[in-house]
Image 1 (tube, rainbow, N blue to C red):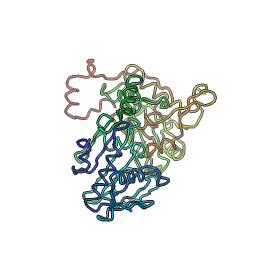
Image 2 (image 1 turned 90 degrees about the horizontal axis):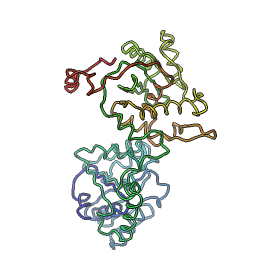
Image 3 (image 1 turned 120 degrees about the horizontal axis):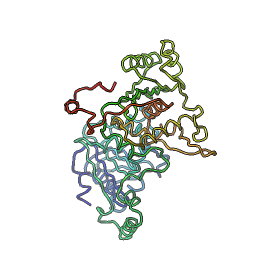
Image 4 (image 1 turned 30 degrees about the vertical axis):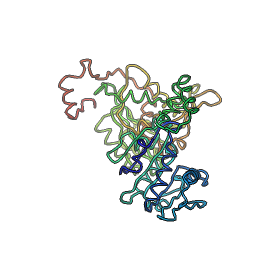
Length: 435
């Protein structure tokens, strides 16, 4: 155990990220390490979580219990803080969701920020916090039990760690103080339910929830390179930003090949119309399906006035589905078309894009009283992602209406892509043959 957690006290890393399953001892080890470091020199330590409605929601009690366990008489415990009377070390406790860019400035002098239960931290909270912990030599300690494959903090920090980030998996068998009863429960779970064992005791993300419409496995499979072009007609889905922090996204799909997605921020109606005009002239799409709710109606009118009425089609996500008996609205119908497209054969291809992955795998499904498929509200998705699923919506819009398609993809390994083309691609040369 000392070997596993020794880097907390000895290694100089900007971020120390520990994850794993139940009974690994992460919280105890973090608390002990911080208390002993706080006895060596003066530190300002912030103990953080996503939501803290009262001090009882924090690790305040855990720290108090460890102070009592080790009889650390130099620590003085207050109702909302803990201080060391010799070194001057101070522990504070905050919920991140309550902090805006102004309130969080109080953390600028923090030496160590401990984020507990980090699986609940939103992308927005992390984007506010990380640049705030800016003191020279400051560290961010993260402890979490993973919930889903695309947990925001996992994707932001641990999925692709840099040289200043330490990532460690710690489980019950790494904990020499783990009670025999806990070991018995873990072994029983391993025999009876391997999936639950992997999640609860090994810290693996939960098996894809049956409330999610689109499987992460299907999206990852679509990220694998299979083709470099298609003779199918080009369809563009255009999801137009409704709010300042949302993105306007263009998705380009040719049959079974979604070849690119581009996003733009802070664009007014004329700016979006200018982008669409450029893509129409350069790429000659067969159709552009665009969201005309909110700002979209103005962009649609501009494009019609420019003479593109034969190419553009306006879609309301909330309007009636084409198949009213099966779907609650057009949004559910289009998103399920993406789901079926990903599962169908021959295989499809998506651009490798983690934001797109998160968009597609973060939307829950439900059913209305008539048994029709319905998607959860965008606002709920936005709370979980920290943003709107704009890229996912843009892809869904490419399935707004059936398009006559007798095209074929240019597949790798079947003779339809020449040796010369494959070498050119390997060398990074641009290939516009698919447009």
